[in-house]
Length: 124
Image 1 (cartoon, rainbow, N blue to C red):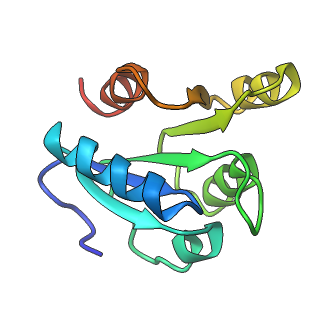
Image 2 (cartoon, rainbow, N blue to C red):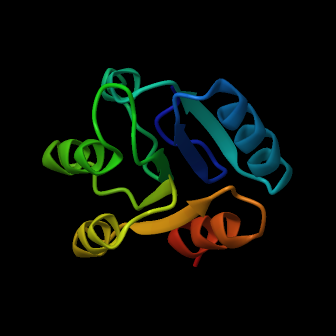
């Protein structure tokens, strides 16, 4: 992975390959570079995360929760902005995400909320 690409990067972590592909397509149309990961372990195996990047992570990954992944990355000094996607997020999840400074976007991702959140996180 290139450590500092010119364009903003979105790191998409979702177990569903169809969701990853759809997000990759729509985000690239919006001008973002997108890297896809099927689970938390795949992302954690990356040693050079781009500096100008935003994490879009599913709340329920097969190997750990999305919030646990964010916590691990931040523990490794990767303070990238993060957005959690979830189907029917409950109040506890929203509260924990808010405490961690993570925005929650509800699936299905049918409107511009995710793209707006990414822009707000990455672009001045």
